[in-house]
Image 1 (cartoon, rainbow, N blue to C red):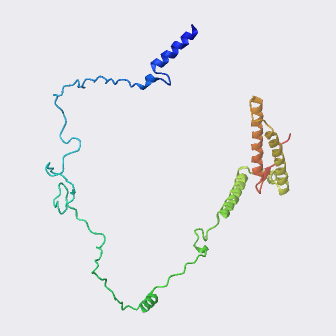
Image 2: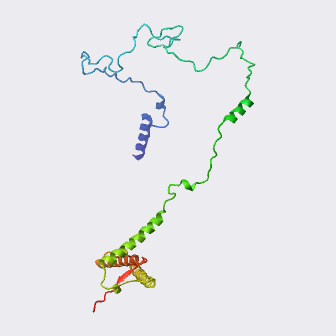
Image 3: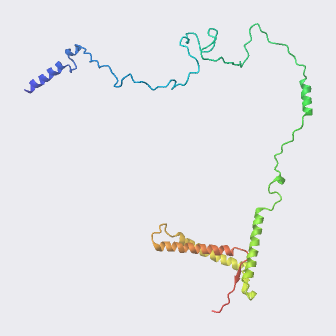
Amino acid sequence: WQEQREVNTIINTIMSGHGSESIYGLIPEPFHAPPKEPLYRSKFPGSLPTNKKPAASMGQPHTVVDAKQFLRRGESAMPTVRNPSAVGVAKRTTAKDKPTVPRRDEKPVMGLVSQKNYITANAVDNILAVPKKPISNEVNYLQKQDYGQVPMYLSRVRQQITEEYRMIEEMQQSNQPQNDDEIEMLTDGEREKLLEGLKSNWATINKEYQTLSFTLDTPAKKKRKEEFEAQLEQIENDIKKLSKKFVFIHQDKRPW
């Protein structure tokens, strides 16, 4: 039964023409023309009036067009010998840019000699010419914008000195003690010693400030950071005050 089934499959394949080698595949199949579709007709009637305006797309014609006069082979729209009056084209007046090419029988003018003495003419032109002024690349400091003015740094130093004298005078007038012995000026040695102590304190506090962690996740860390910043700012202000040349102190002799 299995063998009979395989034989029937082979026979059906050969009869259907799907096999790679079959004699039935050499017979051409008859041609059947497809059915012709009906002619298309619009659902709208063709008797409706159109609302198209004349010359609505290209505008009004600028020339008069005659249907009997059209371009033929060998003619152009420009006026020519065969067509002196072209249709719808005005004749242009074009100027010639270059002269015409000379003909073979035309000879150029030769033997022209000038009577001008160029050596004498050049000598006269050079004698009568005005000499040019030499251009100097040297810098003239007398033509500077700030020539003869006081330099800016001297004005700044003078202003600082005037401000220091004014502060001293105001302090003397406002806080005038009963005895002159209560006010004294620090010597340079005392002032330098105080500056060294302040700078040492600033370095110590700054070293501790640099050891703080970057993450301030607790209130204690934030408070400690703010305290260090306040101390550093106070020391910097004290150093700025003691950096001046004249520093006066008031001795408080109150009994304890």
